[in-house]
Image 1: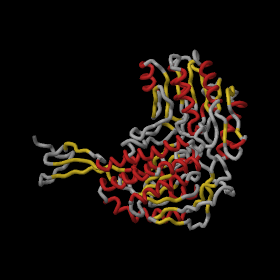
Image 2: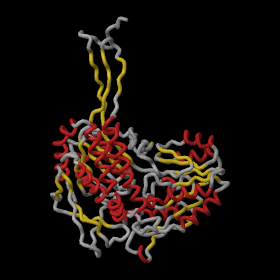
Image 3: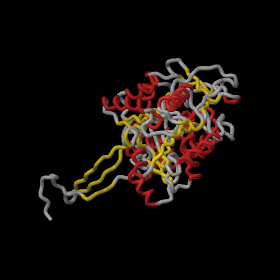
Image 4: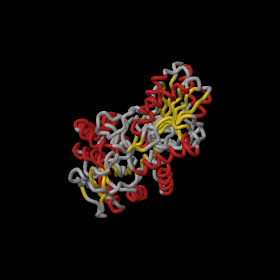
Length: 512
């Protein structure tokens, strides 16, 4: 996922700017730096959503200290009791969903339906993961010695630093926060600097739910705060979602300090469209996969690998439909594609359009321009863009663009298509459209990605299944599902010898 860049200060022409604080040790406090940054609406840069503290290493140290002080009591709180507080949290988020949705769209730009889905995912994650408070299963196993009992249990990792991106402002923080808490850890969150309000809303809901002071802490700011969190000696685990470049630096820093690190990074996902596919359904899925959230998803369908027999028909239909998508402010219920997050992102995306046209030599089937007319003049809007006549090794087919741009690549055989899909450095999500059950199961077997769909787009993960990818997408961990518990807990093996004498395992001969 793309790394957010510094929000720019502007002068609001709309309403008085609200000021927000960090949350440290159960108190809402300004940064010790005395500096602030503006959270700007990407659909209208004259609209300042709020002013947030620009935190530094001292703020991070205070948050870590608060989390450390709260750790023992929270760890000793029975997991079912921790879960009860998390169920309260889910109820609070659910009851305030409409407000969170509106505020998310205003600060991030995604259309209202998608923002509502983002908040709903946080609700679903919280309900689902809270249920683990009455499980957190270990297991028992027969001991190799007589009169001896063997089992294993989970224990908290310790103090967790959570660093989250802009594109899912409440869902992704919840994926990290809720399992960390149910496992008995305390946390410090460094939210995405372009979307600080949604993370703040989540933390404020934690406070309302009765989660004790110091268990959840929030610092706002830029890379300085994130680096301080990664480097702090009392932080045991870093969970990061963001760009591959930043993730690699975090991994190196965590390796130096022997920290646990969980990374969720980039993707270059592909949909295979077979010649027997329902073409209209495949076009629908490709539009949603490529242009949902304006292509700003790590699971976005940025490559469409289409059989030569239906290639021309598919490209024509896709380009026509993409051209007809309604681009505009996300708060307009009629909008289908909102803005991208900020100017730097827009320039990067438009730069890839130029690469596709002038360096790669692909055909621009539709789109490729910034939109500036009328209500779009003050925002970062780009036309939904489709490239055709793309070969697998072109840069636009290899590199993550993270915007409303997709490339259509022709193929002749299923094995060739699978080779194309697997032929990038990432391995997050893949999909195939076909009416042939044999082809679908073969593809599911051979596609080397962490997620695979049949007759659906590459986006739409559900909270009760593991989320993550292979290769450069991450470092092997999985979020969501019960698998996420393996990030935020460690195993402890327990042996109880009730024989009344010394028994030397792996040495004594056991009498039968």
